[in-house]
Amino acid sequence: MEYYNYIKSLHLIFVVTWFAGLFYMPRLFIYHIEAFHKQSPDKEILTSQLQLMSKRLWTIITWPSAILCTLFAVILLVLNPGLLNQSWMHVKLAFVVLLWLYHIRNHVIYNQLQRDQVKYTSNYMRIWNEGATIILFAVIFLVILKSAINWVFGVVGIFVLGILLMLGIRLYKRIRGKNSET
Image (cartoon, rainbow, N blue to C red; front, top):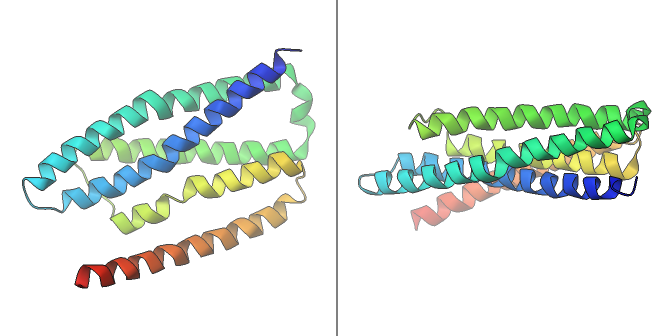
């Protein structure tokens, strides 16, 4: 199984590029929502540019990366089915399902913004933007620790991380509000 590590490497490369897309896409959503509330001609110019950037990121990088990451993961599991007998892998796969749900929800938001339908606030998107971060933390700790028991501590850590991220977002909003007043 000399080729196993090549497949694993490809899997990890596409994990990284998939997450890169999932990290940046909600940022583009934030900018798009904020552009929507600007006056003409800024609104039209920014919206057009953000739609193009989103389309390229989503269709050229994020979707292909998600598919290739998953394909290589399935191949790895076929080549090493013993992984499916390990409890940490079950937990990891549950987080992968959550990641796919997050991805699909981003696709829905992407389609709405491509049609100029703004249904969320930029503050909501700032919070939404942290979804991929939380999943990434969980999966990395599971893969490195390879323990379904220790994942309980990881989940507590994820909630603490989530709370810290929310506090950071609130602080950023407060600072931004003060800067716009001056």
